[in-house]
Image (cartoon, rainbow, N blue to C red; front, side, top):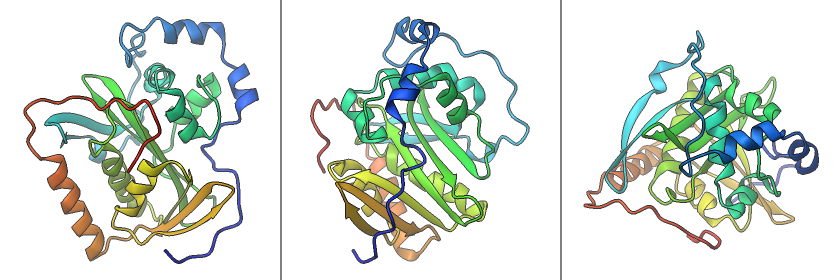
Length: 254
């Protein structure tokens, strides 16, 4: 891949470990640890759908393993479920996502992650039977047509096409809102995430410094992109009689 390395900057989505973790209250911890299922939490408070909620991104999708997941924009009332989702990610998955030890999301983070404007800040969730399986988001760099993209998939549901699906939907949302370029920072050891970007169909340029791979790619659809989308759809729709979640205890491999 060609392309010069951009000057290093701290990713928008990367957590600061000490301050944010210390903000987690005992009340938050009790809410998370009372879960009866690895992705369940106390029932989310009823909340009116935001007036600018983009319903065009509310869809059911069949994924690999013959499971039907629901993709939709995130809402403010997802906070408790997002806290539980994060709490039960494997420590390594959290490290690959936040580049640090970050077992809990603080109240400030939960509000920031779930309360978006659906324009410059956009986030999608994937859910199954009302439980969060994955979260993806972009955040526009102010006064530019560039946005940073990030997503994470629950450990038991990786390698079923959910990450690529979120990237496709985020790119569609971004294009409709005047964004032309995605950027991302990923640890060099995160082969699964890199694989998603490199097989997206977008023309990706990279650079690497201190073990962090910086990726940059235009998101305007091309013939190569649509071919990759068709390939991902076929993979997701392959019939399988029984869905068995993939559990990986070590680093993700391509």
